[in-house]
Image (cartoon, rainbow, N blue to C red; front, side, top):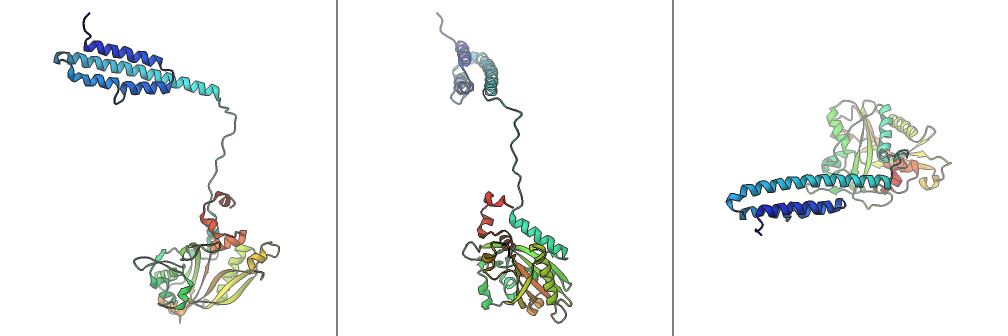
Amino acid sequence: MADATPLDDLKQLETQALTHLQQCADEIELRAWNTQYFGDKGLMKSAMSNLGKIPKDQKPAYGAELNRIKAAVTVAYDAALAEAKEKSLQISLTTNPLDVTLPGRTQIRGRLHPATQILQQVYAIFADLGFQVYRTREVETDELNFELLNMPAHHPARDMWDTFFTTTGAVLRTHTSPGQIHVMREAAGKPIRVILPGMCYRNEAISTRSEIQFYQVEGLVVGEGVTMADLKGVITAFARRMFGPERQVRIRSSYFPFTEPSIEVDIDWPKDDPNRDRLTKGTGWLEILGAGMVHPNVLRAGGYDPEKVTGFAFGMGPQRMLMLKHAIDDIRLFWQNDLRFLKQF
């Protein structure tokens, strides 16, 4: 009996591959078969590596036969794999049939963060009062954050703001008041009526009542004949739009280095609110913002002549207002992204 030739070995490989292919029962076994014959260490690759050992005159015939076998076996494998997938699909459909009459899954729609919602309410109220929104940067110089706001170096009022300093000497703004200087210098002597919303940063211990970052909304009006009466009118209109038309406003003397005189503004809290005593500490009044007439030194720093124009400014914390309106007792909830909390707004 004659010895087997290289072509006989290829035909035997083809027969073996097709026989094993027919014995594969599912997609998993087919994948394993494909690795055995066409993987990096598969039998087809071994047959290809034998090409270098074939006599030169037999190489063309060997290569052509190997290519034919690879193509034929690949076609058979693809057909078997498609059949196995179809079979698996049919089994899945009959074992776990799809009920097309079932209602679809409810899509959970996103919504605005409660801090954004309260900010939009503030914007809308002041827009009706004729204010424009003016945004300024969050990283400031010491000069703009303190000195031009009537707080020179070593001024004791600086202790009111625990400050984050950068390695370059700049600061993360501790309040939105530096925006007053920016807008006054940009206005170049023209009347101003703006609010300046934005994030502020203070190096404070995080607790239920304080965070290292929070929103503020600053207000600034500058022009001829601006008086404390104008300030009171704006604040009263805002408080009644935000908290209810029946709200009463109380003004108390206070101190801020960039306003003179300075005031703090309270509103009376509804007597029927069970949280009234806790929120107002038994007084019935709740502080909502600080304000005052712009200090002459600040007007000068902004390029205005305090002998010709006056102005008023105010600052409020919209997140604090949201806490007051909804009896939220932990400011950290605004930053935790807890859907149980956020879905309530």
